[in-house]
Length: 368
Image 1: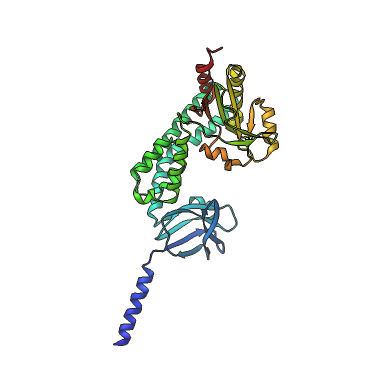
Image 2 (image 1 turned 180 degrees about the vertical axis):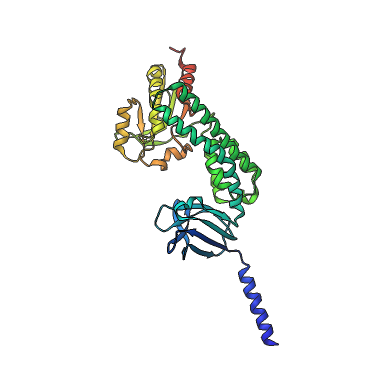
């Protein structure tokens, strides 16, 4: 009788242990015999491996403890660039594919991955159309047909808007999905502070409490501090002669443009002639520019200033995307700019081409 009781208790213990939250990843990757597969994720800006397994005749299994919440990870084949991404969660997940096209692998068993796949599937039609037009644009660009290029650009802009809207719809209709951070974070760069805040407020409490969403909330606060109508935060960086120059020392012009750019940024360099045109026409009427570079090295920065004939004050801490000024102004893409009035209040932002010219002309054009 005692043996029966012991066996019963042992079975219960085993059952309780195996029922604890955990993950299992079973892989069947053709052509991958004796290859070590790694599960990797980004932690504090660095890629770390969280599990690994060696494939035998194309098959492998990884098992681990509880995942705090479903997160996007990468499955990497050895020391190669062959990899694919998926949502790891506390379930048994199966991955099937081919080593030579690992990025096409199919995952089953992850609820979050299934939700994410539904979005990707809905976007694919637009994505394929976008790629086709991009190829056509590149071909036409060799001919210099401006009218045709303009038409293609309109089509590309329309498709991009469509893809953005599909992402927004997913976020609104899946407020409790753990796929939200991977979708909303990049999407947020196409949204203003109020829209981001409204979107976050509609999320399920558990999703809103995730670290990436908390960080997004903090960025919203920074974005609001540099929105139109706010006084521009002051900062000081070194100029090309290594002398500190503050933004406040430049405020006083009728209009001051804080221009975030970099020598390595092609769109910035393409926009520079438009900025130069506005500067040359309106500088004597009270328009000035404070250039802030996200360069990493001084020489290419200084060379670009000379090559593009940027005859205004330039500063940089040469910290790339870790630029203190860029963080202060929530700049996540360049070119980016902020137009200030003579009191230092932000009156417009991210004006390019004709938009910049027309705005400056509206304020200074009739003034002598």
